[in-house]
Amino acid sequence: MIRKRINYNLKEGQSLWICPFNDVHYNTDECDKPRFHRYIQWGVKRKAAGDKILGIGLGDYNDTLSPSERAAIVSAKGGYGLHETTLREIDKLIEGQTLAFSKAVWPWKDDIEMLLEGHHYSCYSGGYYNKRFRGNTTTEHLCTLLGATYGGQLGILDLNFGHSLRLVVVATHGYGGARTPGARVIKRVRMNEVYEGDLYLMAHDNTKMAISDNVLFHKPDGTFVARKRTYCGVGSFQKAYPDNNPQGGYVEAIMLPPSDLGAVLTQVRVERRDGKMRLDWHTSV
Image (cartoon, one colour):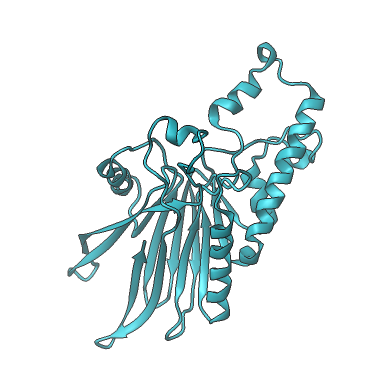
């Protein structure tokens, strides 16, 4: 778990947009590249209009190795591993994929606060690439390129807006297939058993959703207030069920629900109400 505190000073009328990106699989035909590029340009336009954006990656930026495939490489040839020349070619391949994705999100370079690991990533052997990165993952390489914090499996962003106003974002790539809508909701809601937060983000199953509840919060002065918590499936950019194509891939093979394309956005503003400063924040699907 990596925790990061970020301070924002929002002016009247200015918004902070929390912008997750994940399950892009940028190096595949299934990636909806035009949609992803429009998303990046939308963020650029928001900044040009005077708003701020907070980019957070929730994994699967490229369709690199799955956990079983990473294990197969380590155990190759009875545990002796692949030849150095083979590893060198793999390093070249994943470096090219990583550089291509970094170029796609480069307009957000100064606004991406954290990148998390997903299901698909690769590790550099260190021989060809650079001994400084021996054993590093492609996600760690992306963090170096983009100046982002490497969040590993679980990232906590503690956003502070002054006036004792905070918004705590809890983010993870996610797990499991969750075939039914109820199962996909429960996975997100149970994140509050791990860490107390306000906005919970989970990817992996390509679900796009936002559901909120409220819990009574005991303030130091002895009063109670209702604290809103929002649980999100943050969508994806990985298309499924190609029309008039017998090669539907794993999604079609096991009849998973079609992907919800695009991202789930949260808009945050600071406003004065009844003489007091408060956070006004909403999540849209």
